[in-house]
Amino acid sequence: MKSLWLKISLAFFVLILALTLVLWFLLASIMQNAYTETTRDHLIENAEMVSQIIIATEAIDDGERLQEWIRNFDGPIEMRFTVIDEDGTVVADSENDPDTMDNHRNRPEFEAVLSAENEYGETIRYSETQDLNMMYIATPVVSDGETVGAIRTSLSLQIIDEAMRKLWLSLALILGIMLLLTTGAGILIARSITKPIDSVMDVTRRLTEKDYSSRVNTRVSGEIGELSSAVNTLAASLQRQMKEIQENEQQLTSIMSNMVSGVMLINQDGRVELVNSAMEKFFSQHSENVVGQTFDKVGEGIGLGELIRQVFEENKKVHDEVHSYYPEERIMDAHLAPYYGQGWQQKGVIIVLHDITDIRRLEKMRSDFVANVSHELKTPVTSVRGFSETLLSGEVKDEETVRQFLTIIHDESQRLDRLIRDLLNLSKIERQEIPLNVEKVNLTELVHETAVTLQGSAEQKQTNLVLPKEDRAVILEADRDRIRQIILNLIANGINYTHEGGTIEVSLRENIYEIRLIVTDDGIGIPEESLGRIFERFYRVDKARSRHSGGTGLGLAIVKHLIESHKGRIEIESAEDEGTTITVILPKTQNQGN
Image (tube, rainbow, N blue to C red):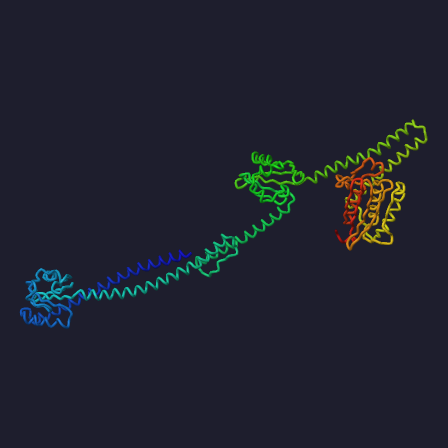
């Protein structure tokens, strides 16, 4: 705004200067005219006075007496007097000898007097006798109604010029002071106008720099005040709108960041414009390495390129499944749709990916579960059906064979019963339909009680069962029956999968927060590739031996869910032909989590 107040000040100065010059020349012209008019009137008055004296004294015909009398005017009056007769001859002059002077018959002022049309004659010209510019005024000398001569008065214009020079200097000084004062006032006025405008411009500049808290603080009235108020209103509106935009952006960013679905935006040039954190995980790349890349380069690894191209070409939604194999295999449900700008012009493609790997895995597990259940049920049902049909046919007459068939039917029915009960229990545990009856449990005592029920199986296989010492009580808060079920399954598995003469050791360890139940055997062990699936339903490492032992394949799955319902966890270490160690970690109290 510096240029604005300078322009206003300069324009004001030029205007005042022009007005001052006009006023100067106007006043000078008026004063000069007034001074000249005064001088003319003074010359006329003196000429008329002298003319009347000459008429009164009848001295027009006595040249010597008139010359002497006219000479007396030379001293007291700074004016020249010349008496001219009707022929133009100089009779007397107050400054020069009339005998040396030329005839004045052709002088303009004298001719004007002789003319009946003019009361006096006037002219300004250079006087050779005086060597100056002179003003001449001639008035007639009238005797008995006739013009008998003329009285000419003259005055040097040097006096007028000197007076005018002083007048011009005075006017220049006065008008110069006026010019300075008005220029200073103009600068102050310009500054008073531009200062609030400077504030407005500063605020608008800060608004362009996104400082929406800036306001115009000047207190002025009129149009500038209204402008300041309008700018403040605009700034407040922008601040409010930007706050809303920032809040919306924050909400959108939070939503995008916390979405488990991947979102990617492709612009109309086919380049990635936006990806969220979930999409970064799908691509295993940071957004800086993805944004700005072409969709062919980004989507080629998961098969998105062709789908994006299809949306661009057909301008319609596309739904399909895509697969990603790095860093791990993923199955994703892809939804692609065009997005539009103003006038419904296609601006690009938006892609949303839902990770359905777990859903597909669950579907496969459900399918496998149904197949496994069907398979597990088929064997005992087939056995029961086959042997019962044989008995019903009446072809078997031997009582020992009949008893053997009935024993098989009884065993298979019991196995079928155990399978159904385990399935029902597992289903209830998973749905948390079995509430925990939490009480204080002496885990050492419970281990010994549970081991009694398995002592017969251990002795039958000549297995050495090592239990923790009974003199050391280990107390925890838990459901006694559920913990018993966990201990029973783990020790039974150890007995089933340990060679004859082997050893199974049960030990207890505790710290301030948790208790560890450790079951170790030196049996056949578990292959490394099976460790990750050992807790799946119906998964068996040695299927033939598991069925022979009467197992349902659901024991460890039930154990895992019971442990998790107690806010615990289970760990397993095993090596093939070396043995297995299973560690159950449970919190001492149920109001503390792990």
